[in-house]
Length: 482
Image (tube, rainbow, N blue to C red; front, side, top):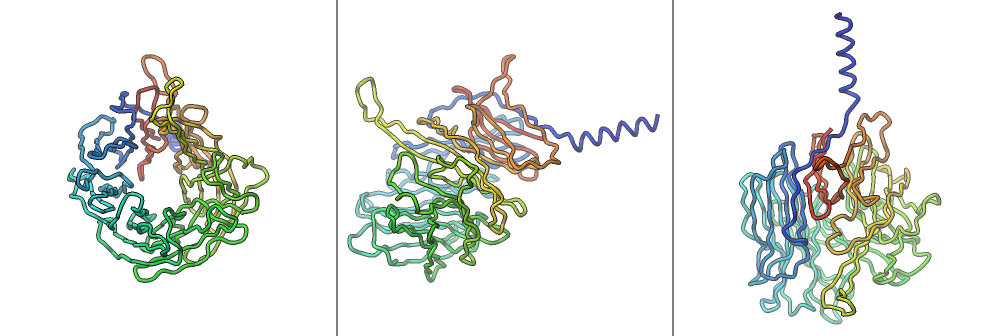
């Protein structure tokens, strides 16, 4: 009898250790108050989460409201708070970034006002513990003469979210050199340094450039010159509060396109996609998308191109254009970069044969691909994901993909095959996690919803993921555990 009992306990223990199953739970359905509302899940924990929702792409000048709602572990709302983005006179700011810290949200917004001759960046801090929003703090400001000469702001967040950089291109003035101003703050909004520079480039009304800030606080500006010509080239400008250094970035056969700043074992690197410059000139606002010919990894500290890899012959790369870096996951010696074609377009809406003044917006997501490097830049493989999907207006929320690293590999949420999909790649052969049932039971039957990929959030140190799903006009908070 004791031997039988021991056998049963051993069998049970083995089952508990090796047979993990996903469990999915859903809240009661809800409807949006306005079709233009967008949702974001913040502060995910084993005890619940909060949502941030607000209207997207609205033209109202006098009010931009942000609503935060707290949910318990059963996904029931228990508290809510609404506040407005700051105003400049009667003009409300436009939301640019929301930085999520351990128990704070930093709301960064910008606004300009012709009569007051100002263009500025604002910040408000929400404290989760105290449930209060701070007074507005102006992070950056410069004078303008009009909206056509209002300059530009770029906002960058360091990979570890400890630094906030603001890079301002000063308003356009004919026959002068480009002037920039850079501010760097810590995540408690303390100014670390600011810098004014006149650069060697002719001033323009718009620029082809991307700003990044390292964990150290140095600001990197990737500037592309002659973006739509055969003479296209890129340079990296490094600002440190005192000086600016310029170095070549592009080279023969390597013209970097979209990229993301990542930290690999403490080293800042740029991971992204490139064009080899061999086939055609980049087209302005191309309906097909801009050419991409492969992926790269660049070591910023050593100014070294660690890896440059053109698409392999065994993949169909003809639709891998205008690739954005959706996400980069790092696990031990492996780097997984998710890239996705992204295009926007618009046209005036028709009412019968009459063209109205309202616009319809169209969004293309995909084709998509996973690039697998090691941390030395060696390519381990390209993995094509999904073909393109097109969305109109508010359907945009169903576009794109989201990834989480689990013991069974890199798991990608998407709406492949027109409904929620959860696919594992680079699977661990010893994994014990089985594929989940994603159907929502309701009224004695079940259905497969869409996932809103940009809402997917995993809980640190717990086997738990939250996300939002959609079916028709109904939405559901969803929790996956294992």
